Image 1 (cartoon, helix red, strand yellow):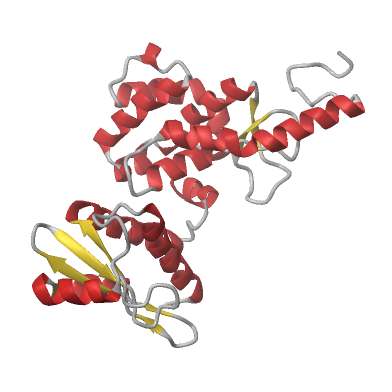
Image 2 (cartoon, rainbow, N blue to C red):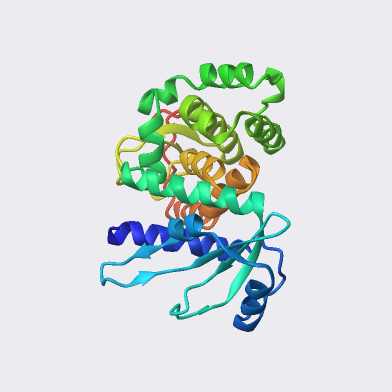
Length: 278
């Protein structure tokens, strides 16, 4: 396993730890883990092998997975782990398997050079940078495929809840392969209306010619690609409203700063709908 792959696997393990979607309120101490294993645990060799990580130094990180009655899994951290040696967490079976599927997607994405949101979108995108010229068409097709009344997609945050529910019925794999551009387009429209911006193609930042929402300041790029990637790429239920709100919130301080600075310097923001000098 490469150094980068090991880092990705470590990140995925950390994400599981941070989300704390486990059955125990507090991480199980080593003694509790030993008692639970002795009483009802059976080592799951296949799942344990799945999480094994080999680092460039040659160190092998061996977290252990035990299957327990009642469709539960016990995740035990490597005895040599610096922060949680021998401690563990209990997970409901369905969530644990969902998390494993997510880890595999992360590994597959990295192996196929889809390690960033832009790379991931570009790999699956049908329309690439021409997406900005097809937004109404993509919105209409999104509503039709997901069987949503078109007027309900009114570019509000509430409409993203309806869209998220509809997306759940389709499944992540089909969404990514068939409706990625559509979700990016609609998320972008919600953001565009929210921040009073416009679509543009990147020409100033790294990452190539990807679409984003501009408000006239070079340092601010609202990224509907990030919204789609995070919402469709996570472990839990699809939540496009949360992802879009986080993207808007992420840029809020920078956008405010740029607006204040522009007002102070009497420099109008660049607006493609305003002729120079107007």
